Length: 105
Image (cartoon, rainbow, N blue to C red):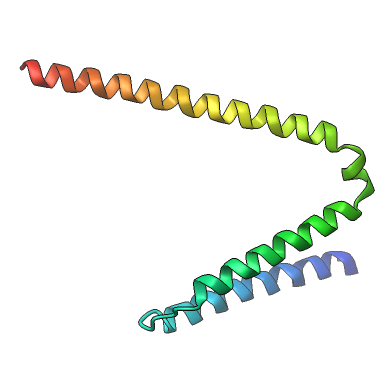
């Protein structure tokens, strides 16, 4: 096994360890009212998004292909919204017909 694979495995174990420790701490603190925790989480998410933006801005390949990535993201978004609308409409029609049949009986 090479050094790079060992580092990847170590990184995975660190991530899993952090998740398990977070769950454990959350379990131990579940009966306490953590008033400031939602605000702290929101601030940390904003910081992570800012740092992600800096990382994306520094990546020349992403910046050069931004128009392509943006177009693909737009198409995927439209397809997702269209699929959700079609699925919810189909489900509504099926349930509405079932409700009408049940009301006639």
